[in-house]
Image (tube, rainbow, N blue to C red):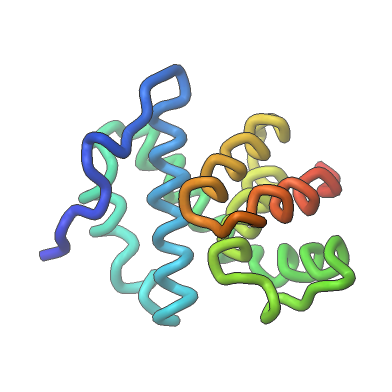
Amino acid sequence: MLERVNSVEDRPEGKFVHRRMVRTVVFQMLYQEELNPGSIDTLAESYIAQELPRHKPLLEFAKLLLQNTVEHREAIDEQLVSLSPNWTLARMSPVDRCILRLAMAEILYTDTAKPIVINEALELAKRFGSKDSVKFVNGILDCVEQ
């Protein structure tokens, strides 16, 4: 059985508390996939069920974000490369790349407002990225067309 990664203290207070946690969990699964290709196929269901509250809309949102990011990864990566002409995907840090893929999938394939997605991506970058991640992620996501 998997050990819980996210503690109660990791769940911020506020209006968007649950969706923020969903994004954190999906980001962690995308990062895991970066390090261990094929792991999403075997771990996604159990990891989502373990890390998120048993609230159907949240579970569906998590599955939607993950599915959109994985299904549209090629199109997202093409747009990501076009929006960052001085960076190849391989040159980007895996953390930044996963945050950008997740945020771009949410901007392009859901009805979540772009400013909300950017703010949430910046929170992920602050928490998991390097000192330059916030500027990098913000610069790329600002250019994404809905």
